[in-house]
Image 1: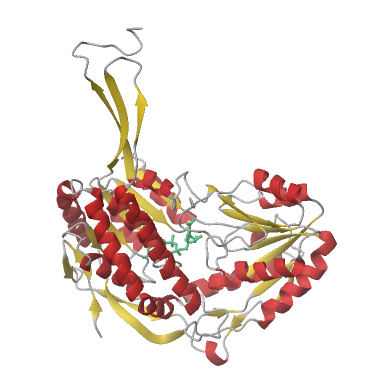
Image 2: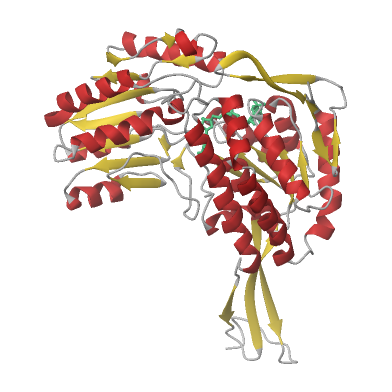
Length: 493
Ligand code: NDP
């Protein structure tokens, strides 16, 4: 079997230790999808040196020229979309329609951000002094370490790599160990599109070693991380001593509010998609459904019936609704949370076990699980389970619903189903999240809009939109005095 290598300084090279690791299909655990370089600190150091050496030249390449490479990569991603989607489903399990969506999101982002090669505007402002000009422009940060999770293995890396590159940074990309193949394919495409050597480097290997080496390096100027809040906290602390910029996109415990005047069938439909899409393994997954007591019985019965009818199996089968979870450890963690929910007194309405029969016999599957009678204080209503488990929380009013929505340490996404525009506006104003939806689930972000969350979901940065440019660049203010005399701001007038 082919051993997939790292890309360092334009060369595909094995780990210096010669070690490798396997990437397995979570739907068919006996199937090895690929064997990858298991890198260590020396590999990361080599990649950092390459990125550092490439930076002085790359930062001076005109941004429209840098963008041309991204446009070419985007065209190639369109050509290879189906191949990318198929290999993604094989390595991480999401159903093929969603894998195609993940690739499409990456394509959309590449083209959107490549447009910034001719835009990424600065601004001018009038000077308070005569014969003096003032403007502001973006300058690159330098060497970027991009550390990404497995659940959106093409979209999330591209959210980081495309803006980093178009702005003139050089990059070391450390993808999740569960999705190295998608990372390999993306880098292969970007590299073949014409990136000079050292501008984009790919290093596979354990986060605790390779990710950590990026965080600790004095030669890395920015860490852009998406993943769990636990790892994010560690990265944040690791970046603090050197004041390295760090952008963190982390967990969520997103709530859908369903009011008594909602279209219940639409709310059920949205909740099924929000809770069980990507087997609940989305940072924006609808893991809490906060339902008005007047409709909670009808809603819960319909939701449980729909959850029980979902078809589990290999995501490559077009008829599969819900694929596996990422690996055995994830399956065990999710099953433990189901036991915690039962012990806390929540009512199990659907699912509640691993699925081990038929097409699920050789994979890591968990039945779509619905808990009813959940209280906001329960752990299943507070902690990110990251699997196909959702908690129905009954409430008596809009105020109580908003309080419940705000009751976790996360703040990524929330939504409300209601026919009352006043309630919708109140909730949009008072729920403290980075993203809010009316009459749809907590998922469905579009790349041209800022993406990110409040509280322990993030540290104030936003990806997506043009706001992402602020992560990967630094503002420089330039003053030009063309008076030929000494002029003193704030003093002369
Ligand atoms: P992890 O935090 O476990 O891993 C994320 C990345 O960090 C991986 O590349 C991992 O490498 C690496 N890593 C692990 N330990 C360290 C370390 N000590 N130092 C540096 N890097 C490290 O998250 P998952 O991959 O399991 O992804 C799921 C999480 O991501 C969920 O919490 C989810 O909510 C969040 N997420 C947030 C999003 C957002 O935009 N807010 C979007 C998508 C997901 P390795 O794989 O080798 O362990």
